[in-house]
Length: 205
Length: 204
Ligand SMILES: [Zn+2]
Image 1 (cartoon, chains in turn red, blue):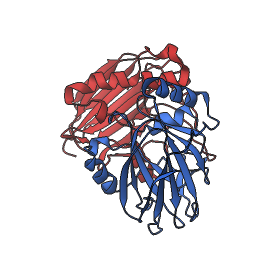
Image 2 (image 1 turned 60 degrees about the horizontal axis):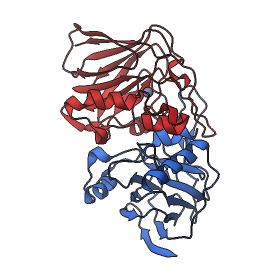
Image 3 (image 1 turned 90 degrees about the horizontal axis):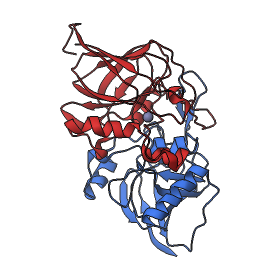
Image 4 (image 1 turned 120 degrees about the vertical axis):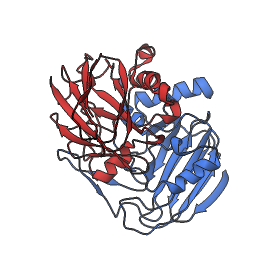
């Protein structure tokens, strides 16, 4: 943690289906606000000085011995370095098992008619390109505000969100980070309440 | 016909190409064995995608009758049989040193690490608000098996390091690659059937 100032460094709206690449310095706080409720925000984290040191969903799950993310969750990398900590959360829990939608996985799940619908992995590739994040660098993301119940019998479903207008999650960067965001355009399942909506990003550093 | 057989000692790693149509059978040679597997597809870019595999088949575990899917929505392999109905895929492998070295041998690197399957291991999920996890120590026993059918040319990477949440000693795992007469599809969900059909149309 090297930054303690609380200047508003970022205040922007990401439209439904759009994305963003945000550089957050160590100690910086990033708040993602679900402006209209039930909006999945697919997010990846990379060490800004070494993008191979990137978020690992399943190392994060194992280290906290729990599937869902919330306040106190440490987001760790494939090297088990701490990339960020969830320091505030008014939603309650977030998914990191469900991954991002893609044109290809939409075809498998919903059929050929979805082949040319916009999808999160298109957004990741578009916004990641400027810092060298390409197909090989993509990994399994966090889905803020998304509800993917996992059960003791080993089942998994996508359900209507637990979020509501104005709910937010706040992350504090443990090192300099690239935060790659896709504000999910999915309309074929309830992850966005069947209606993708804008989100707000607020940053202090 | 058995094409190739190998015994991976505990706490070791092994990798091999597997041609489309061949089967891969892993056998636990001691209680508490673990085989963490990564898979890379025929084009050397398309990798196993655990989230897509799980969400398209409504499962939080790997079990027989599932297709292991790639980033690009293709079938990598089909789990055709197993003596166990739960193989962990939610808790990764750590340290990844053993798997990473095998990746490097094939020209890959750290950026190609992806979520693995921990064959023979079970991490139970609680029905509590955070879906808490607990490693199940007495899950796999000597003689337990799992068989995959390669649905395209694959590179497979296996580490026999103990599951990262296990206290048990490392155990050996036998690998057998076979060229069988056509292996029929098991009962599959429609999503899995679509992935197999696309794979056969595009690169079959
Ligand atoms: Zn999406």
